[in-house]
Image (cartoon, rainbow, N blue to C red; front, top):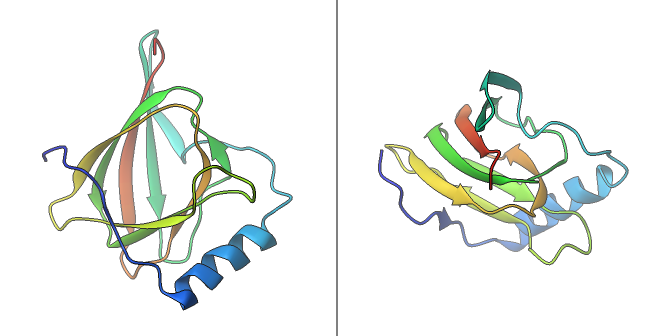
Length: 129
């Protein structure tokens, strides 16, 4: 699986309204875990697993360290950012063969599976970054 720049869907007015509605409905969420469960942790890295069924979302989370996302399965996953964020919400397209993406620290978002397939990824959190 090669690291390639992520591809994004062009947001239709309907999808933008859907993402905005999600954000507004979850506006009072507290920060939670970056993914579902920790698979491995040592002094250098923390490896998380995230599985989102269609319609399922992660906790609101902050990327406090640098990450690599190893995206294995899925079709469309949204990154919904809180109101006032310097980054707009987006929908990422999952390549058929998956992808690996570097994520710099600092982002706050919910991951929301807006597609029809189960979304699976491994997050590698770099503790010394």
